[in-house]
Image 1 (tube, rainbow, N blue to C red):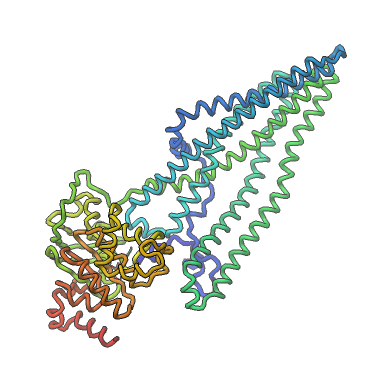
Image 2: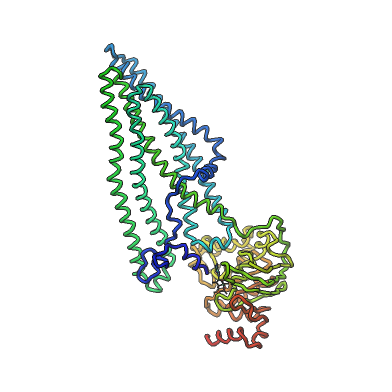
Length: 622
Ligand SMILES: Nc1ncnc2c1ncn2[C@@H]1O[C@H](COP(=O)(O)OP(=O)(O)OP(=O)(O)O)[C@@H](O)[C@H]1O
């Protein structure tokens, strides 16, 4: 139905066709472009919005995190200074008299400080994890709740995979930022500031010499890291492409084997696999080459320290103990600088992910309640379509002025060639789309003036592609009405002739059906969906009848089930089976979005028009 809009989003080659659309060139088929953007420039407004998710937890937990962070940093930065005291005052004092007592005391203090540091860090990690996990939970659930409400036309424009990626990959990629990134950023800033002050206080000349190398180190380390990280991201992207292809291949394995396309599939997979291997090789080469280089850049700072430090000791401006402390501080110096570089990268990635997440969250369902919408009273079932025009895309009318008058309790069969507008009418009745022009009323009320939920909850839909969820047979029927009792479930199953086959299943009603009900036949799936619809007991029933050819016995069962299902409610059936059409109160023949003929079976047969032709064709086919 919507391939036209979808392909636009796929990668285009020079000819303007989606890549891989030419025979033999399947290299890059099905690449949904917007998910490839890995990082985005900094955007404060977006970052603020992202961090607003921390707000509910910040009040209770953030002060604790900050306390632990300050405690950890202060203890960490005190240790080198105590070490210098141990060297200069206890081990090798100027007067030459070693003081073991002092050494023991300092060692004991250092030990206590280490314990405090360990405790502070353990609790800090614990608290930040709690914040991070809650934020991710909220974000994921906000996104899911919102997506549930979005209208059909939103899903028309996007492949399901792309929606999936946002809820899984994009949210996950923010996880690290919230669990460790933000707090590490604060720790690193505090630590850096502390070290700079200490270095300048101990010896400002040496301090300045070391600090001056910082910007150089920062730039080198950040740039190199960006290249390495991008290479790894490329690996991840290629792998996720493999995953989505695998998903598609496994789901489509029956079609693949039926069309003997296994070799083509293997060839396509091989190419993806090779791509992934190559990008892994490249990333690991960069890692090996640049990793040590980053270490070396840190070493340069240490060299300056010892070279200049030794000179200052000779000159009497520095003690050995202070040089040792200095070197320890400098060691602690590179660590946060390196991490800040990483953090910056992480933020750019978070920008891209959060932009995609917010794009979804900001998407307004274009079918929504009017501010003054009223609840739909219990539906009697009189339905009127008045000059209904509808366009999925501007300028392309799928329905061109439909007028239809349906009385409560009638069964209306919609027939017509493929693409004539049958499903479109069905979609409009439940307000999955809003009409472009005209009016649809139920019991005299315009469906745009009533609360959507109160409308849809009274309309039952059985789609052609009967969707069976993973779970038990019972769960699947219960989907029609969640508070139904087991007895009610059995009763509806019996009413639609499904009870018999369910009983024969290994676990009866508790049999687990695999995803999408693969273990059930088409007819069984349809009976199950009838039971589900009957349980919901809707006032209006919409049925997109399956075209699958089924054996006469099942056909008979389905017909009997239909009689039960249709009784006492207004029903619309996109009909394919002759038996269903024959019993309908009104048959509406559609042609290119217009009503061509209208009447019951006998009337239309007499007219000898399109309907007559369709029936004749079916008989000829049989
Ligand atoms: N989501 C969509 N976006 C854009 N155009 C659509 C969409 N769904 C249907 N159309 C177009 O609207 C027209 C009517 O389609 P509709 O699905 O109502 O036909 P149908 O009679 O139900 O066909 P079928 O018997 O094959 O299911 C077609 O031209 C189709 O291409």
